Image (cartoon, rainbow, N blue to C red):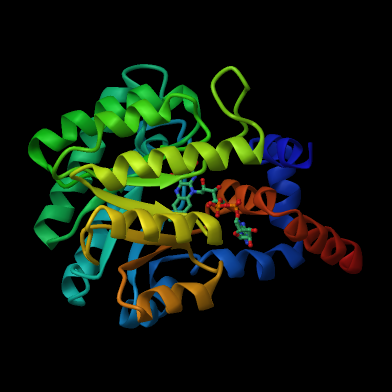
Length: 308
Ligand SMILES: Cc1cc2nc3c(=O)[nH]c(=O)nc-3n(C[C@H](O)[C@H](O)[C@H](O)COP(=O)(O)OP(=O)(O)OC[C@H]3O[C@@H](n4cnc5c(N)ncnc54)[C@H](O)[C@@H]3O)c2cc1C
């Protein structure tokens, strides 16, 4: 219930204004967001890449006009040039939401997003790094996978995200387990109807394990995106069983969550990548992080009450 309510709030413009204007929010946002712009995020990037790999997300989603989509492309182009300039392109890649580059625009949204994603991929290729397409709500899954297929004809290293809570995902994993394929498997962060998604945690976890089995036994590069100790332990066993080595799969976690565990996984020799968001369009991302953990909400509400 609470998760559903928070995810509904994450799409409300009125609530957005309220939350953004509340002074206490800033401190909480800083736990999950590396900075309000690239310059502010650079120290975090430099620090993390000493021990871990990184994927950077320039925050933003659901742009409503082509000019905003262009602004997103320019931000990624600048970011990729910076990765090249600072010699970090082998330690850091970028994650892109297609809705931030035009996917939701009413006319030719998918084509605009594809063209814009191509520009970002070309900049990534020039810098010597890779791009992963984030996955948004289930109404975008087919379109995002179609864009992925197009991009991969020119940029075969483009990665995808699959969400274990969707009933279709085990089949999508089978389609994407081939050599060269990079798939980030996560549980899923949006509020989806039971017609397309598992709603109970136990069912989502079981689906996650089934999907992991498919990906680990396949020939691609699985990216295990979870903070759940059980999923991580199972992934490790499956990787060993499949004869995998560090470097042909990786673990991923979000910036600000289970930092000690991130270090531990990196220290044991596995590839550990941190998803690092930055920018001032943090509202949707932040609300999804609140929704994932009831303790976060209690803390947030207590902080709001204490400041009112
Ligand atoms: C690298 C990465 C990329 C992602 N990309 C996408 C994407 O493209 N599309 C998408 O829909 N989702 C994405 N997600 C989010 C994902 O779908 C889940 O919503 C999120 O990771 C929580 O699921 P979990 O596997 O950690 O398991 P859970 O069972 O939710 O959590 C396990 C434990 O992790 C800790 N934890 C989890 N979330 C939080 C939090 N917000 N704050 C504090 N502690 C927390 C808690 O200790 C919790 O008990 C991504 C996640 C990661 C790690």
